[in-house]
Image 1 (cartoon, rainbow, N blue to C red):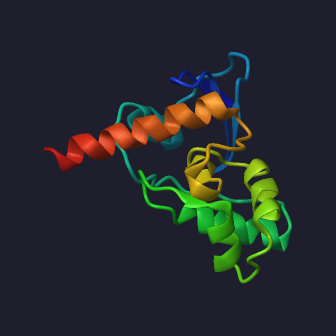
Image 2 (image 1 turned 90 degrees about the horizontal axis):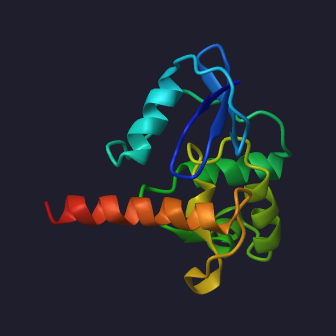
Amino acid sequence: MFVIDSPIGPLGIAVDGDAVVGVRFGVPAGATAEHPAAEQLRAYFMGELTDFTVPFDLRGGSAFERAVWGEIARIPYGEMITYGAIATALGDPGAARAVGTACNRNPIPVIVPCHRVVGAGGKMVGFGGGLDRKRILLELEAGVALRRAWG
């Protein structure tokens, strides 16, 4: 695992070969070996990257959790979707809480953008990295989207 500094604190990045297999919040300082994931995360936090292209491997989790993570991975930059909408997309409209649990277990946050999943009515709820980090990530993306829209 190697560590990068970010506006939301240090991020530990685990890789297996070329694929990212984990991102962890608030890890202690560690090796700083370069990897495309580090470059892309730095560019993301600078507002220069809106689509990660680094390969990732979503390991573990139940079939339902992997399905939720797949839905999350498709949420466009700067957009939000509710837990209920993901549950509905997966064919189980009553599974919003289970979607929230799966989001919390997302092994690759930021790259698989679980911060873009919000409660009903856009309510800021739940995030494995804490609501302050979620808010920072959403504000970063909203600001970049606005700057791009206004040229």
